[in-house]
Image 1 (cartoon, rainbow, N blue to C red):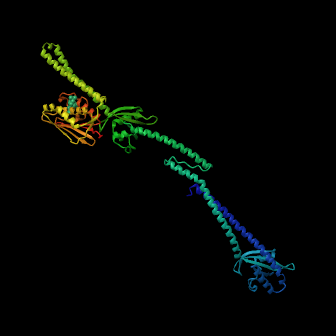
Image 2: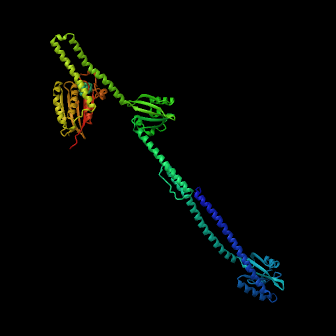
Length: 583
Ligand code: ATP
Ligand code: MG
């Protein structure tokens, strides 16, 4: 409590007030007492003189008269009156029998009265048994000292009067002190209140509440301080807001970029990571604090790139394959400008790498597919050139074979250009509510000859309450034909093909299952690629475009197509289409 300015100020004030008022009242009490006593003395002296004057005649007469005088005067002035002879014998006393009293010649006031004009003394009276104020004056008869007249008042009487005065003074002083103390406390409080407010506001600001301001009430130094403080607070708030916006923007950018970003200090300690990096390496923000780069990523190849960057202070790049997802990453470690540390950028190039492989395969496949019919054509042409034209039958046969090869090429280029048209989104499929049942029945009719030839049973199981699909009739027909074509092609005689269609939520699920040769697990993810054929060795005719076309058509319907297969047992191709919403 006494550490605060307010209480120190108040305590100083209070101490000062107590000393001043206390000292003043003590002095006042003392002054009043001395004054009162001296007044009393003067009064008693004049009374004693009066008694002396009155008793002058009695000195010549009898003691009886003197005693009566003492008693009478004593009663009148309400004090003890004593008349003492020159030798100290008590001649009369208002309170006691003088005969019983001892010689008073040794009393200091008596000695003083005889030697000078008046004597006073405060002492204990053995006769009355209490403290008394004695005043004595000489009695002169015919210019000669005949005795001493003494007037005495018990001090208890005096003290009673003085006590009243003192009580008044001390009471007044106490009231004044209380008022002064309250005033001091009030003053201390009003002086320190703004300081307290300043402290409170500063504390709130330290807690982050920067919109706090002090009400500037006074124009004094503290008011000025409060004004400056408010200015500072406004500036601070503005700056913090600016920084927060900047930081939020940075955080938003960092957390939304698809590339993983890690910032490390000079000792490889991870300072910051973004969400993409967390996802790539499956850790969370709280796990990285206080850990090193290698502890967080657990990949020595990436760490090597970082270490080289930290060592040389130059940008380093590299490509790394990480477990367990076998992601292919491009790593760029760039030194932080102006401080030790580095920013490591991790780009997921897996998809890019996959597309690159598909592109390479595509080129290889297309040249392979083109080469076969072209080689046959060339062979046939050369044979004809070598004289086979002489034989009309052979020529016709050769031309027939050439026509087949040309048809193959035509079909292939036709499919290719169709695929590229669908891929580029140039063919807009005409979407309308389509009855899947009708399409399926139509396709089964078209495939009849082929299933007969392949000695296969083809069964359709269409849910009786199937809603219409929002689809392109021609598109769905083509998808189904492609799937059934494959099923026929890859199922040995005696096998069966099941075509099913059921409603599933707001989609329709259509599946084509066969009991054919199946697809090796390793090829499963790739069969929808252009020109991809599962086992090149066993491939019959076909360009490998059928599924790619089917996939594009289904995706143009916002649908999805996939395959489930067990090698040697059979394959099931499934695709889903959206239901046409009821009008
Ligand atoms: P195209 O359809 O262009 O005439 P294709 O039938 O070989 O040629 P896709 O229909 O795209 O090409 O099929 C790609 C590959 O997927 C096939 O070569 C085959 O290896 C595999 N495949 C497709 N359907 C089946 C199936 N029902 N059973 C077994 N393998 C299949
Ligand atoms: Mg096919």
